[in-house]
Image 1: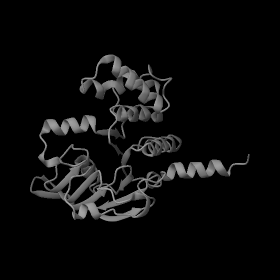
Image 2: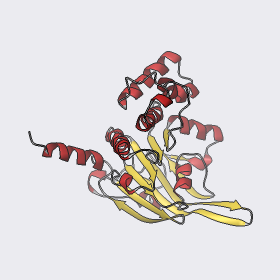
Image 3: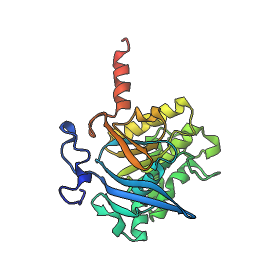
Image 4: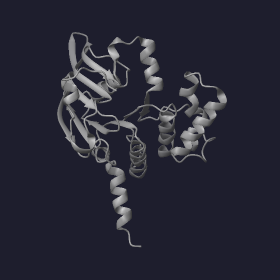
Length: 271
């Protein structure tokens, strides 16, 4: 689907053989750079980042504070544009899009999940999940149907009328994930999605991301937590705005590590 030219280094970045095949990636960044100016000081947030993410992958982008991972997330999510370099998303050169076209991609093709959940207070889960569909102009009855299905798919079919204050942290993040998938996006982009959760809720949310990935969704997790990286098929590490390592753990189209481990544990249990 990607329309970048043949021979582009971004397309050759992740050419793992075997089950991954030779499909072009959903996301292709080539020599992307971003600099912020604070007074007389230039902060180089990204320095010539070249990266490809294949459809169906589950990628963790890791790094300490100031490494550039949040800036990279903003560019991948069409929330910001690079100063130089090229970003191709599903065959579209993002820098050539109007602001309106970028907004349409954010609403329809990318699902966002944030550390702080970003739910509307005193508003039922169902209405929180409906919100992207409201922006998309979907009729009320269809909104209700799709939002209900999304909440059921994350295990909250019995919490449709609960407000955020009536839900645990893990349940609130599941509502946020339901909101992210309700438009059936091609890409799920999660920024520190377990940063506000306890260990039990963290494992539950990461397994949910694994399940969504196993259904064919491409998932990119932005994190500094090693626990999160153990659920990824591939781990890219940033430092000072540069990619310093890129580790492929399983094939892009293989069963996610989190689900593979759960299946192995279940099969090992005594009958």
